[in-house]
Image (cartoon, rainbow, N blue to C red; front, side, top):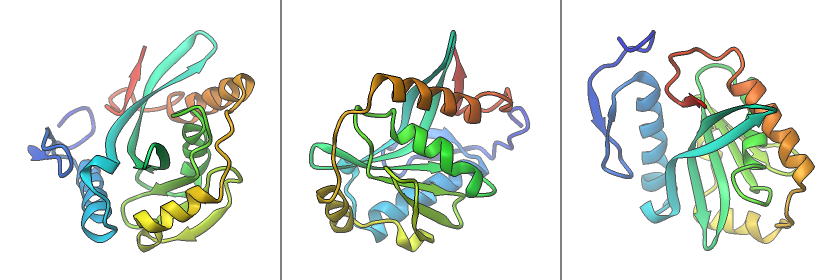
Length: 183
């Protein structure tokens, strides 16, 4: 046991080849990695797992993890955030993360519990589709990217989104959660 997370041993990351703790949550992340590559057709070079993102709320800050960042050309077109349980409660912090990971709004935001998924329009937050099979393929992501603006997000908006992300992902989170690093 690691905190209250059951560690089943070690596993090899499907994308990077790194050795990771084998937990139920990590098994779902690996399932998503296989889905992205084997079923959706993304290459390893288009997917970055475990992207660190700094969330601030006043003097407080923490490093949050984005499970997958998916690129198309020179743009980040999609982020995927995994979390067990209800998807509805995952929407808002995922949208905040999509507004912080780069200087523009990431067009596609996916929240998933590993069994289901919601595909959100990054700018509006509207649920565009549901289900793991609805996660966009590379050509579908290219279509999304062509239809959005990559205008920079204002400093004020960045500050507010960072506070929202901190409130959802850090405040009241489990101290043993290894996807959050309190700074």
